[in-house]
Image (spheres, rainbow over the protein chains, first blue to last red):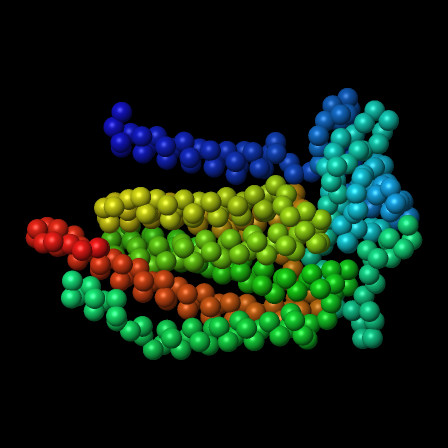
Length: 145
Length: 239
């Protein structure tokens, strides 16, 4: 094989690979996360498969045991609600109504066992009003226990 | 040999030295917002301030790759050495700013999201952009013939720069952990000002480092040419 052939072949291979990643893979089958409704719509396939699930923390559902580092809360997309259990401290901005992405698997008991809780925040950045100290949600969360 | 020595001792143009001084002062001065005047944001607290360097670093990377795109097209069209050297300079500067964007974003992500990294489309496409331009620089260093190097790298440069709109739009096209772009409507006015001042300071820095890198590329290219000439004439070459 001559060098030119290898060069052309390599270029075509790389371009095809990127084309697939960009238009085929990332756009379609490799969805970053699913919503609770989409997960449950999978039926039998929803269970015991690694998946990323996203929604908002249902207000009042957060149950954080600081001594056991045990976090339980409900996650909702507005339609469907799934209970999530996780070990370890949540990120600082984790709170009621906040968007979150959890990694883990949905078990037969109908609980999503998460190994990682990530905060999915909005694009809004607000300065605190005059004389107001921003609430330290993380510390507040630990104090409440 | 004499010529090479003169080349290496050639003074940089005054405008470049002046611009560099201004750029460094502007970037340092703009940090007054982050460290002193800007109040901690609701929810984000002080982590929001990383925006003042993370976002301008990303803008600079995008601008640098747009320069690569344009210079590569000009090279393929006119075959001018200057366009090739400008593309090389902008590719290197762009790769550095992309790396900086990833690094600063990672630090912010650890605080705000809870993770240093996740394979969402925005982060993944940015990593792909970074790797393509690291590959571009590797390709250049492995190709000796200047014309072949310029042609090949122009191809890779154009292809790589096509990823810029993909990275930019990724947060709108696909589901990501990364939030969509902020606008003056979604940010407090004082944060918008701080970000804009940092953006301008970073832009000055971009032009300055691009200027130095282009100058270095020109000197290197001339040294290469002298070296080649010497070999063709059968002279002894000391490198």
